[in-house]
Image 1 (spheres, rainbow, N blue to C red):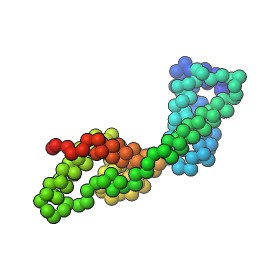
Image 2 (cartoon, rainbow, N blue to C red):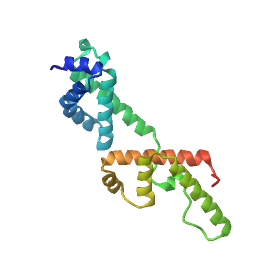
Image 3 (cartoon, rainbow, N blue to C red):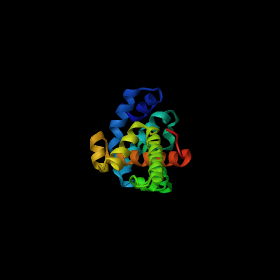
Image 4 (cartoon, one colour):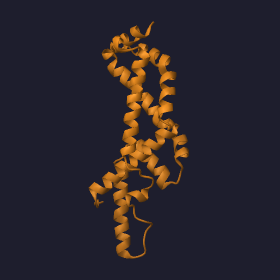
Length: 184
């Protein structure tokens, strides 16, 4: 089956055609994305986004504008550039200290009460995270695992673990800044 037939079938919702197209173009797209994006996890996300876009937009393919390989590589480049721009705009959160999490429990009664309230806010914020992000934040910043160890524990690529961790920290920071003191 040629590429044009596959794309037409994909446009009609044929999952088997999509898998054939994926198998045919995965190596090309993966090699291209990994050259553009030097973080393997982020590149893998771009690859996934590219094939998801193929699935969603196959009906818009126009053979007069280029070959299927050109079409998919154009999508891959667009997704990669978008992702790199997105990453460049985001502030980097490297630790819970960036969230202004209080230090270990202090000595004075007033300080202990404030610390307890802060820890309750942290627990509330953690509870609001998606499970996969909460686990990453818990393991890396509260249990002391490395991102590599956490990725292995979840059986996911390191880049995916780092993305979940970063997103979790960003959501946690936003929650803590917006919610303020939380009554338990």
